[in-house]
Amino acid sequence: MFKPNHLILRNGCYYFFIRVPRDLQHCIPTSFIKKSLRTKIEAEAREQIIPIEHKVQKWFRLMRAGLLTEDQLAVVIQELVPSMTRGKRPAAFKLSDMISRYIACSEKTWAPKTKLENEGSFKLIQDIMGDIDLKAINKQVVMDFRNTLVTLPPNMYKLYPGKTIQQVSAMNGITPMSTTSANKHLTRLSSLLKSAVQESRMPINYAEGMQVQDKRRSDEVRKTYTVEDIRKVIEHLPCQLNHPERYWIPLLGMYTGMRLDEICQLHVEDVQQHGEVWSIDINDHGDKKLKNLSSRRIIPVHPTLMGLGFLEYVDHQGKRGAHRLWTNLTRRDADGYGSAFGKWFQRFNREYVTKDKAKVFHSFRHTVADTLKQEGVQEVVIAEIMGHANDSMTMSRYGKRYQPKVLLDALMHLDYGVTIPEWGRGGG
Image 1 (tube, rainbow, N blue to C red):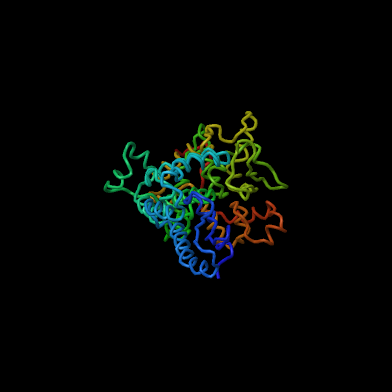
Image 2 (image 1 turned 90 degrees about the vertical axis):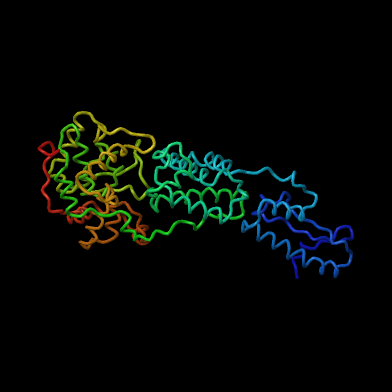
């Protein structure tokens, strides 16, 4: 027995009547489908409606699956709505139209760096797919996009300016982008198509769940520095008075686990006493940015840093009227204060420490977390030091943050067994 609204009586004659589902309104240029059954007898109408109902529901399924070509869709619409000619169908809504609309609706919430990254992804997406009609995007189109994407190098436009996607794909010896990078592009495509579905321009987000499987364990994506790596960092650590950041920032990385951007944007006033413990207040005051809310935290200053004169350096910066700890670093709207230093450290890292591309400045962070873990420090304490969200509802909802003394006790386990030269004495 069909739903009553699929069979209606008008002026003594029975009709098949069904409203077009909202998710298919971008395909069918009317809000309902009405077809005369040419009978006034209900029993005959119910018999006639059966094949019509099955056919319409079949077409709906094919539309949702994206399995109809443009021409096939036109034939279906002509049969569903005979009064609608092909010329009256809505104008095509291109991929470029959706990208422009998505950016216009979302960019106010994006940081400058995020905006650049998103725009770069959308350019790559459109260059690979072409400026395709949204209605022509189906699962196969997205799979073809993914298959091409994973063959392309990172920073393609910078490495091969002026070359097309096809030309780069055909080149030999290309080192493809990482799985992580490919999945970032796929995630942005999924967000774009999700928005198209919400606007009823597509039936399904075909990019959802299409990420490339990363067969590496999470601890293999970024490697920790070994004690030997740490020794090499210390051995070649620059100690010039005119570049204090090149000395202190790597040390802060290995003795606090802070992110590079968090260290590079520090203000003099962020180093302060909490009770009897000298600590670093990681916050997003002023022009500083944090990754998320959990990144706001207090980290004690490790005794090794104090012994090397870190507090004296901070005091010196304050007395000379400096607002920030590292006056050699300048801020970029796109990526804050860490960009130039990150590039310097990468050169230093490859020349003096390791050729392993999985070992970067962020490896200090992994080293701190892994060292504390191996020393038996509780995971909730490590999470607070690292600025990770606490998954324990009891601790996060009802418990307050750990006192700096507790965190300092945990950080005391960071002993790399190396002798560090004092800043300004010897070194590169």
